[in-house]
Length: 567
Image 1 (cartoon, one colour):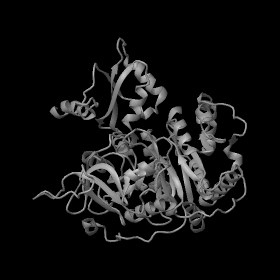
Image 2 (cartoon, rainbow, N blue to C red; image 1 turned 180 degrees about the horizontal axis):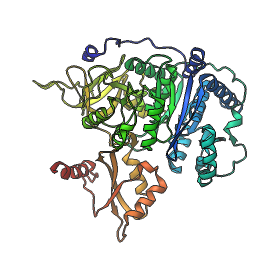
Image 3 (cartoon, helix red, strand yellow; image 1 turned 60 degrees about the vertical axis):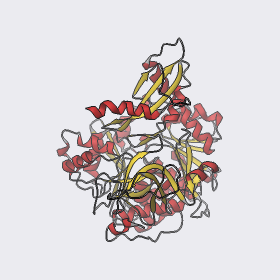
Image 4 (cartoon, rainbow, N blue to C red; image 1 turned 135 degrees about the vertical axis):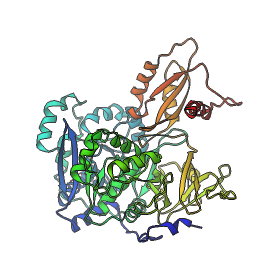
């Protein structure tokens, strides 16, 4: 039973024809069809002004070919991992595509990660080549000895700035950034882009294209293996769902490209449709973000709810025209109906909520962008995607509809489709636990309407989502427990109107130890990415526990929620 099919928009078919081949073929296809079209715009806000530079599809192809040939000379072969420690910038696009062309596996890292986090992921993926911003080079050097890294390719954020901004940046900001002399064997990116074309490499659709790291109930990051086919399929599903026209779209990439949402719905989708991709490196600069929209007039603007709240809060928003945006998919956090209505009323743009997870490339379902958008739901399963709800205890029985109700009882959401991952990198047991008989168990609790719309009720996982970024409590707890004065620690997410959720830590001091909140926060800043650092820390004599001594995270959540419910 697939009741959602009856609510598809008329032009969306239940089964799609997917292109075969590899992700790296998207660029030469777009260049052949649209050689003079602008492929990439780098939109940088600085000093109250907006600066932009651009690359055509033809020039982007030359840069990718040059770096691909250089990667081959550095010894990168089919299946080798290349780590990308970059924000949204042209260098990310070049390094990502060049890695795919030579049959390598691109491993995007969050550039906000601490040395501890970068070191772990480099060890786990076994990357021998890293492409990093110059200010992150000291961080890579700090952990390098414990990894297999042989070569670090360094690039400066200013390299694709327009001339005036490049000069201003050099004179005013560059000297304040972390830096270190390059070690023997490490290289600057610029000269590596001038090489000739690479040697052809046979790449199959089922070969792994990308490793994206996500956490789990243990808090240990796992690499999600996504094949060329997985990512091509999901890009095509999104293209059809959003009714995008080849050679006519402009996609604004403010969500990070190192995140599955940005990688698929901005970069891969943009290449597939021959779109112009507007790269915004710092979406937290809300005025700069709005200026980018006003100037570059994107037709597609993937967002997290944090963007919508921040934009709507601008007092002089009426100065800017955002009505070029035709498609505004929203994911990463629940989209509150009030936020959706407020953004729509102030801008004339209707964001629509969807649902996905890294393990599904990532999009699984969405509200129709031009059809029946039902607020409070995450929409309908995509073409060729099947979703169902299973019993929370057994994971087997299908969840029924209670008598007289249009919604099923809550159950765990499981999905199946061609966009579902190959598995977790070198973790067969965890892969088997998550993928059972072809069904991906999401760990999310949902309900289905009789019309086939789904809504997410809660998460079985304890994951916290802050501004669209996944945060795993167990990871933060492990760091807190390394503090010499902390005996016990438990972390939860607390609701926040702007960011979705914030991190709150509860800690118990060791005997005869006096803890200071600021000292704990300073310790976290040293060992965690900034967005994972707790917003608040509460010091307690004890934590709530079960009869067998297991700390009760739910009890703390209920305790925090109780005062809010009384307001």
